Length: 258
Image (cartoon, rainbow, N blue to C red; front, side, top):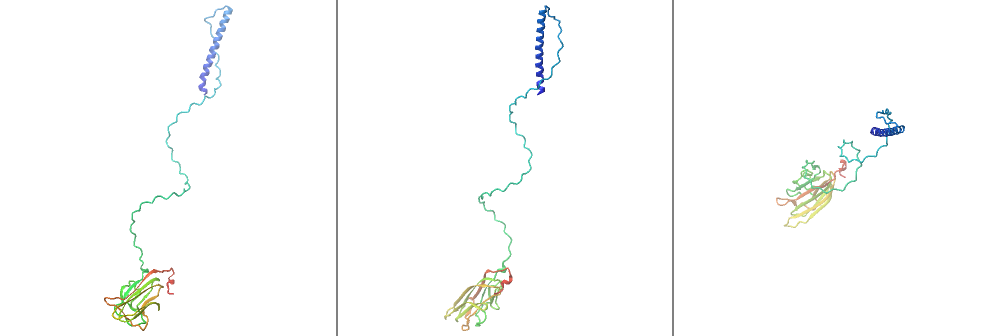
């Protein structure tokens, strides 16, 4: 600001000095006229005085008008990542999507053979008249696990659980009373009163809760009745049983017969 104001002050000083010189000339003229002397054309001027000191700097000017808004600058470098914010509230469930494509077929699982138990046996001829022994069914329709023993005529439980047993017997020639036994105790029996000239059918069924080692079989119920049970190529007498629900416990000793 000082540099810009200095020439102005010099100009003002020059004007003041010129005005003062003009006043001095006028005074000299007046004095010459008073003295009766003529103004000398060759009159020499005085030596210029010493320039004065610089004046005091002026006050700051008013602020200029606000300029036009400049163009946006280039984006700065990416700053560091901030700390993760708190999890927001769970949003509403979206619309159900379309079903996906079927997956690949999985590998075969472990077989459930230890939990299978079933048999279906039949007679091959007429039974014996022994009433104190199990009826032996020796014709096997199904006995894959060999839980039915065709030598003793008994089913022996290997897998504890709920079993269903049924029998269908062809009766010919004699009245027959057949019972189903469990461990030597009667659980069901059938009495067929035979009529001459006919073939009768005696049947029964029962659901039993068995423990490991329990035995189930069929035999004649009373000595009074002779065996009229038989089978041929056109008629069967069958004894069937199978596991409905296994009862496998964590402690093997709990599977013992009670």
